[in-house]
Length: 148
Image 1 (cartoon, helix red, strand yellow):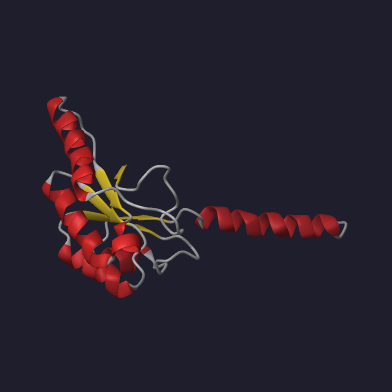
Image 2 (tube, rainbow, N blue to C red; image 1 turned 90 degrees about the vertical axis):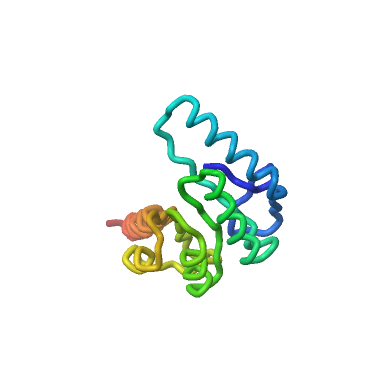
């Protein structure tokens, strides 16, 4: 995954991040596409933008369109803030798309079937299993605390 965030990278759902200019972002993606093609490698190139939080949805969508134009296989627009924004991204940007379903993040957490219907092909639920395991651990600790 290639990103347009300025280093050091921050979580896409937090404040204080910035993105590089579009030309720099495109050159990174183009270099990866060229290297993949020249070496005849079977590698998928995902291009991520965090521009939604900094420059707004229009800029983020335009970046994703440009990422596809230079050869990215999949785009990831981080942290759309509503179902309407998610639908707009899926409608306006060609190609495969990824959704990040981060509980308590900026993006509404939706079931895989609804994401698929919108146009997403990949969905990440990064904390779903961790949260479930924490609930189990808390229950176990409560039993231990009560002498069971």
